[in-house]
View: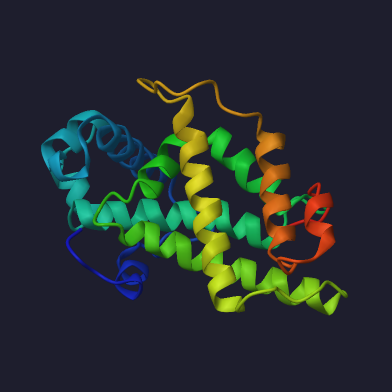
Length: 225
């Protein structure tokens, strides 16, 4: 995906599937999504060819072009699916009463490879920018809710704080799912709940001025999401 904007990515992602898609179409999409993800992780997005994709997915070139214009279109569809599956749950705080960060990291544990492709910035980073934009929207909404509920306003410019928080969560998430990836030489990754608690602490500190004595007592009881 050379260049491109977030708006273009939204337009590129297929939207023709109904609530009850044809099972054959669904199987084809799943096979091609999985093929693209595995090949991206093996050889990198730029090196992936249509021939490799159809061979890995077990479909013909004609079938591929029935569903996708090119590999950029396929990557856009994968990014859109990740955003829908992960960030929509993050935004909706589903299941009821669940912690949003908990939901996000649980999804990362269940589907690390496709999220890894997005977080690594494959396809010139357009998918990653979409993911970041949606993350920032969710954090902004959560901050509105927190302040309306009596929380202190952020101690720095909110636009800066939201971008910093979004970038921090995304980078920590990328690092966390990559820690146990094949070939990783990092130490065993931190437990999920430890990472979430420390992200909460960081979010709490963002609401406290540098001279606020509560900074030294922060333990992460306040929820980021």
